[in-house]
Length: 157
Image (cartoon, rainbow, N blue to C red; front, side):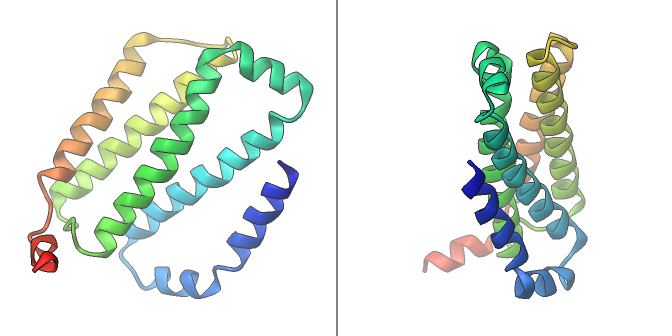
């Protein structure tokens, strides 16, 4: 786990050209890649903590902690990375509808992630808020998919 942190640190610091390119892009693209990278770094930090016996016991005895980790890895990193790529390739146009979709999806992601983490730590749990976050992600995804660009069909030909 420690070597993963070293690798992630090297990866983040080696992205100089990408950092220069992303500064020239739309702020929504910057936000999407930031959330994706934040999720990736957080996932690796969580893996590092899980190598400590106390946190290992806590993580594997609480299902919400495991769900929060998977949620962070799959939805946090992969979904936001895919959204970034689709927007950068203009497969999703950055219109008001897409921005609303991104906002709802991001709000839902952070809401559910927070509730899962707090629930796993036995601090707070509320099914209604978890449902609200999940529903926000669903509506956000529907808005994004309804706003796709027709350029993707031109690429196939």
